[in-house]
Image 1: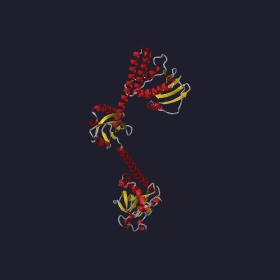
Image 2: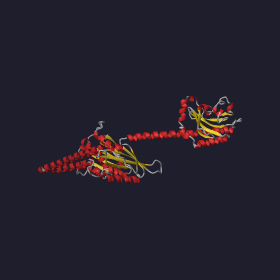
Image 3: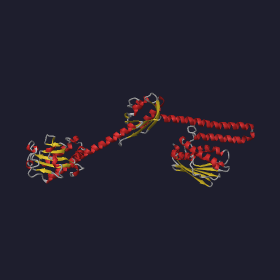
Length: 494
């Protein structure tokens, strides 16, 4: 048991520690009642108490053999006992100068014998005592076994008090954490929600009523009235499938807002269980993406218009070449070759342009289409492709096309493809989870490393490292530029 600490001569500090146990909740605590009953039997006395000494009173948390629940502090025996490091034992209070004129001695209940084991907090603050009392004198006092027993029982009292304080501290921390979390969730700009395993919603933050202007739904079907009819079927089919399978939910749809207008939102839901074996709960958000969606649509419209105009330029040049050759038949071989190159460039442009509707599911097919403008009808292609083939997704086709379109056009301007005898070899090697692609130029002008990073290099960097989850490096050999790339098969296929 800790001893009283000198620092707690400050009564205010002692009372602060005492209050930290929230003793009101321990009145007649079953565990404390069991302790005092055993203490009374152990010491063969009619009265035993667990007492706490407050500012103006001594309160009895649990007692045996006494009806009173408190006494004034100035007549408290335990106020003396708690300041001692060991058991305080009064064999005959009537003959003890400290207590002989105490009203608890001179009047009811007529205390004669008292023994109090101090209750000391872990900080060393005196709190009160576990005491046993009798109206008869105990001339022989307690024996060693009884003294030891009271010390052990006092330790049990403190364990109970400390458990109570630990519970209070933990509860307060949980409440504070929950309050911080609540403030965070209430403060986010998105609608946040939670639901049980059956899809019954039990929480929405304040954003729902602010943005939607109505009471939140209780079940999923009540949500349907806020979803645009054209989006409802796909959205709810996705939600019910995710709920049944316990998988993440994600959907974009138009949602009716308080102003009567539909706005695009991104809805996300994640299933989780607090502990293993418990039913899943759902937590999710609804994020307004209306401006982003509109910006993307405007970008796609502009991109489509630009692509259309570029293709028109190819068509106009092809038409002009065709018309011109009719007047000068001797130029027909050159015109035929030129129009072939222009058509191949148009096909390559469609790979680079997202959303053009061109689908190429194999890497070799994509590369052949991209390099067709440079290979022409010669028996020996100027860009020779070798090695393995691989599946590619429409999503991966665009960055791949951008990368090799950039390498080819640069080579045509400054590298091997700018010279009549120049050529490029492109080797594709399977390395397990990755493909290694080696671009090697030969026969062109000596490459020069200016040390500068242009837009093209940044485009390759973004495409390879970002979208294709790979890496690349280049070196300027005497024979020509060499570019080594590695790309993730998984990124290419998804």
